[in-house]
Image (cartoon, rainbow, N blue to C red; front, side, top):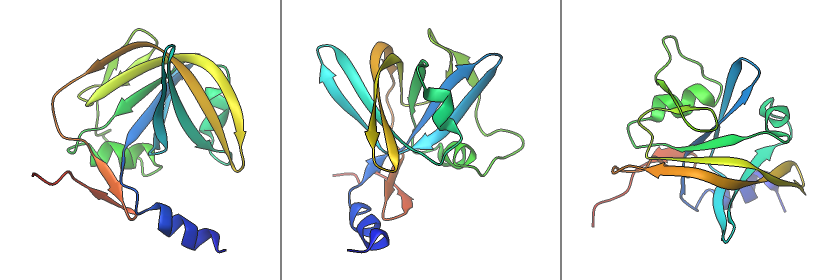
Length: 153
């Protein structure tokens, strides 16, 4: 089986787009992730899958993190945190309980580290939800390698 073809197959599953933010010393780090899911309601746990080759891997080790669920008008923010940085930055920070988060996001889920697991070429980070807030709006979606949007029914 071909890994690139498998990636194309998995691209048929539409996902939301998130930016994971985390604090280290005086800096706030962030990276775009679409491999995110809810795991448990009791306790409240979420999972973020992080590529072992990303610089952000070290930032999440035993560290608080915030999942910023992006709205459909935040494509520039997603690209900024995917490595295509822009000046000026296409977002504003706001202070959450566990660190800085992206203002105007559809939802913020603030987590303390729960566990980390080997996921092959990724590390699976579980976070215990300590705070969350959500807003009205439409999600930014990712489908077949491109941004997409929810179709009205």
